[in-house]
Length: 375
Image (cartoon, rainbow, N blue to C red; front, top):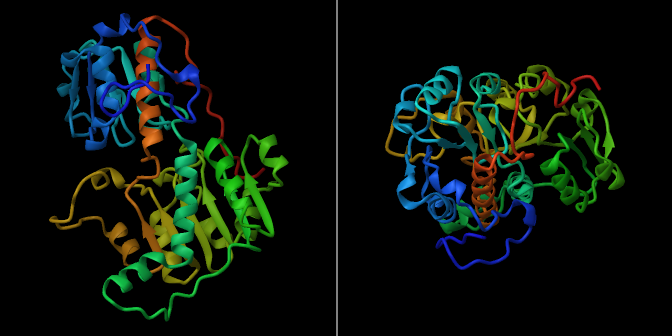
């Protein structure tokens, strides 16, 4: 069964594996109640119809607020909670959910840094995610942000809207012939590397603890983090957020970089030290910065704050630089990705209900660096 934005009209899902599509007998899932935290309007196009179709209209509750210690009781006695990137499922939250009868944590995204997996395991709670909804969406957004910041597209667009057709100060540079560094070559990083390879870089470098043969075949050269920072004209970040990768771009790594380096981050905000970015921008160390994520985004992203006093001084400072572009965590937001998120989330419920093993289940594992800083 494939769910469209109207909850019916089955059709194929472009780019989705057939193994990710829900089977046609979800009777076990019908008894499941789900509370969806951080609900947004776009969830009504695919996710909510899919959940209601498989769990029943009365079994799905949507809340526009994030899950936290203060809001956890709103889940009531739901069998499962469905979470997004800024929902917090720490020890306190998980303990309260478990006591109320919650058995399943559904992540409608790939990352799981916001869930205490060890506590979930101790409590016997299953955590299941959507590991690959559309890596193309995020990789393409990274390239779009690169082009926007390099060619000063937002500035040019705003000028023309005001009938200012001067192109003075809009000089950019060719991506062709530049040295490009891909920090993290998993699903998204690999696709980004393939797209950027088409621009004709003089050198395409990558850094990852687990080198990809596919990336090597396209001509990507694996180097140390230090060499990638020192040699790259453009750096695109695609690593997951772990304790080992927190602030992987900070004062030390920024100091290694070339003058006028361009940095793109569509992964997780905590990978980059935002205060260190401000310092580097003030010193004209960074030629361009484009981010779809921010370390402290949970208070602002996905909300309209235009009529409020903005209280984040670091984000305000970043937005003040004319060579910085920040978008509000929208890289995933394509129709294809939203449909795949809904399909996989429903399948995760069915698999859990039928006690079926799934590669989407996330369990605590010994701490392994996703990106080694020295290799």
